[in-house]
Image (cartoon, rainbow, N blue to C red; front, side, top):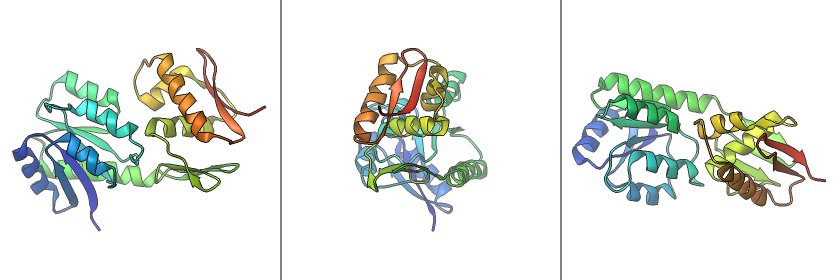
Length: 223
């Protein structure tokens, strides 16, 4: 069974060319409008997503943010693809958190090999975390409390995994920002909004995530 890939690009010719290159190795679904992809994304899972950077209604960076925040996102590798090979485009792509940047003029065999390697890495480096009555499936990027799935966003999921892996230690603010947002600066209000939303979804769980002002976050047993 071929791995399913979504490719979003406003240029129809680009869609056709890349689909032709990838069709032999992957099941490729193309979208000329980001909005159409987001609608389909509600009910479809992919093993990788290719995103064009420059699109008129919703650029690739904005679309990336919507994807990783989407409750249905399974953590699959997201790659930016563009004919804009400038340093600024490449750097911003990796700062945002993309796993690779493909120049549209790339050799077809190299494109296929790089996508395959990202998918293989994603599928290999997954496991399950169990903590009291909480179970986190890193393969499916889903969390369950008393066997009931929690409706977490990808950011909330990453925060939960990070505090579980570091329990009972504090996760320093700098580490939290780097590992969850993959950047150097995130507003405190943004961090603690996500933490608050995550705690509300964890509900009656015996543990909660405490924000320690400027220090970071820590998973602690409720008093």
